[in-house]
Amino acid sequence: MIYAGLVSVTFRKLPPERIVALVRQAGLRGIEWGGDIHVPHGELGRAREVGEITREAGLEVTAYGSYYRAARSEDEGLPFQQVLATALELGAPVVRVWAGTVGSAMADEEARWRVAADLRRIAGLAAKAGVRVATEFHGGTLTDTNESTNQLLLEADHPNLFTYWQPLTGMTDEICLQALGQLAPRLSHLHVFHWRTPQERLALAEGAARWKKFLAAARRAPGDRGAMLEFVPDDEPENFLRDAATLLAWLRETD
Image (cartoon, rainbow, N blue to C red; front, side, top):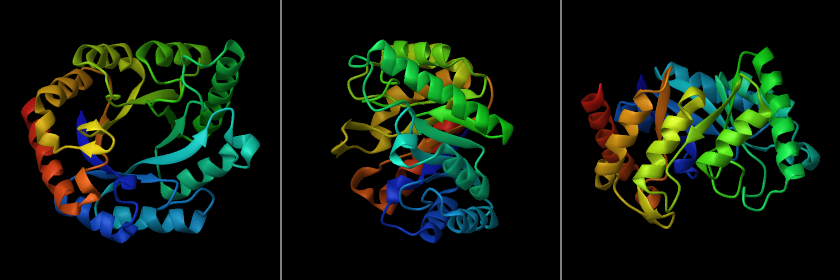
């Protein structure tokens, strides 16, 4: 099953209460709360408060979008235990993390080993707390291609490690569909947006030809996951409500 939600960093300038109201108005199911603005790492009281207002509105906390970078953040003063404690207070079933700090084309074997080892470690810590770990599928990290992501999941070799997915800039439909097929056993949530570049965001409806195929492919993966709207044009709530209606219509079509 795929359900619809919002990534809170879409509206970094809005308070959590306003974001909750918008998501409820849109008829979506849940929110991935970000660890940069809305639920900062280590602010446990804030995490508890945001989790409570989310659930009181009849919504779910779908994930904690942390900014923990494997093989880097511990050295820079952000221990994963702090991230995990924040996720637990928030009531998040998934912690999203970043697979290092360099892209796969630039990483040597030692860099890959360090990232994989740290992902294995934090996946184990999270498993003991009943929380999943999922990597962001993103440029500038070791999850920047289908092949590197699959390789990293094998290298880390932990049953509690999963991956998000989103169409990276320049990816053809064919490569995107290959990714959804290859990553299906470890597929976590989807980040949903439509743009030519990060600076040129378009209405989600303009991406219908692509996204209907992507959602159909994601439905074939085992388990449930969110299709989480992110980065609407001009960061405008009205554009979010429009895109939310589009996404819900697509999900009804593919039910």
